[in-house]
Structures are given as C-alpha cells and as structure tokens.
Length: 88
Image (tube, rainbow, N blue to C red; front, side, top):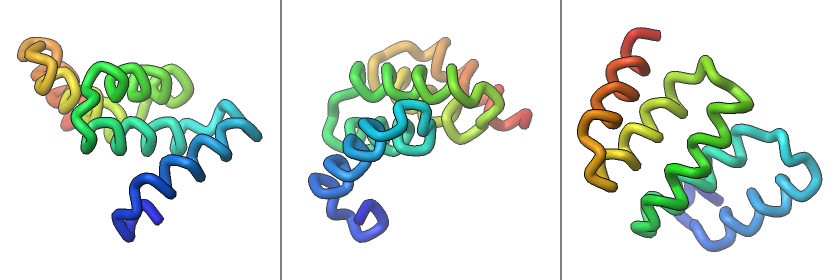
C-alpha cells in the first residue's frame, strides 16, 4: 500500500501492526515517512526518533530524521543526522 502511494490505508496498516508489536521500528519509520509527506514534520521527527531508539544503527532512520529536522528549520541538527547517515 505504501509503495502504491495509498498513504491513508498504509498508515492504518502500520498503526495496526504497531498495536500487535510496538517494537516494529520499520512500521514506526514508515509512519514517520507518511507524516513527513503530509507536512506534519514535528510528529514525523518523533516517529523517526522512536525508530532510532529501537534501531540506532539505521542510516535510513537517521536520514529521515534529518529531513524532518530540515523541514523544522533545525539546519545544524539536519546536517548532523544526514552526515552521520552517510558515514554508515
């Protein structure tokens, strides 16, 4: 659904998956991606932060958090996250 850009349905499925297993960092990250696409940058950043707590070595989650920080105007934080993601 996510790859088909059916974001409302994908969001519902990711939320359902998290109800069954709140540790699914992949689902948390993808919820963040949907929030980012919808312009809810603060909520997206929170999701990416949560995904990173569960999978701290993910360059994808770091990059995504950097994108959210950029949208929130945190240029220094965005640069740090994106640089760190590139170093993996």
